[in-house]
Length: 464
Image (cartoon, rainbow, N blue to C red):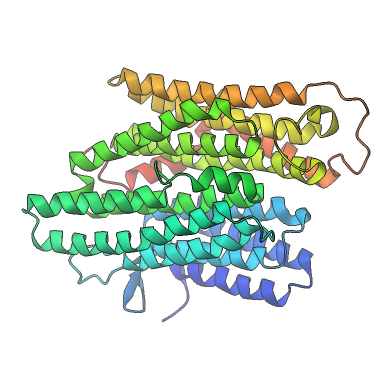
């Protein structure tokens, strides 16, 4: 086996993880390595096809166009998160664990069965995602062993997903041998649906998301919501695209649309009632994931384009909000609305990050989140008025929650913050840069168009 092509996306992060362990006494060097390696691999993946198949452990490693673009954006998101946590003392294990998770998720998306197999088995994908989920416990725990509720729920749900995925894979193999069996087709679709319901925190298996978002370090929450769940969304698309009997079945698409609307409705009902930023972020992210699933279920080029844009910009939206939340928790001991009183006078840039990230997650213009939501609303308004109203309601609900937080931030304070309570220069620069990117994408979404077109063209189940 030679190391090259798509194998770089698996091997290099693992090598970087090992180096960060060896260099753990030098936090700056470890952080720079964790930032540069995923970013460099993302650039390589975008600029070069890396499509030469290679063999590993009896399997074929091949990087298809859709996976290549998705992995590049996942790696860029991870690099941005590593940069954001650099000065927050995340602990020496954060970077090697994060890099190992990237390697596993890349393997889950690009390791395929041998060419002589009759169906696209995803046994390795299931195993790698399960291991990545276990590793996610470490950054989510955040060095606070007393906080176990959210992480416990997370690992239980992800552990249940593994046998469900393996059963779904077995059913796919049987279905390939007996494609005319309606009972087997229905059972396979049900097993695939159950697997991804668990993996994507779809109701009623969503409870770990608000619990983790409230307890875990905010940027670790953003890592799980965007890197781990982002890879699961791409795996779902690969299954729909690779198994025609599943991706082309109207029942599967109906299940996706139905699950998506349930999640959107959950956000519409609960987001505006929250009294802390952690749970507000969680329900905003759940509603956003619902919109992504609904867009995929449309099985149209415009729907898939909207889904991919939302998948990209949700990382920016949740990341911005998480950066502000991190500073609020570090300086003032929490992110409940009661503790946010007067925050804008004490931490102005952190407050702007929270507000801009939250409103972008709600899909409001002129921020980055508007591009995908607007495309989805245009597609949906032609044939499903109720879904359109529900999507708008979720945006309004998240926006109300953010504005309630803003009201507390704008309250007058008795005394100004001292220098130790304010943002450091590096923190302010990072927030300003993220705000600029969020605003730029919102005003000029066309910069994403080339990648979005290539991504959509890679999935042939669209428009069947």
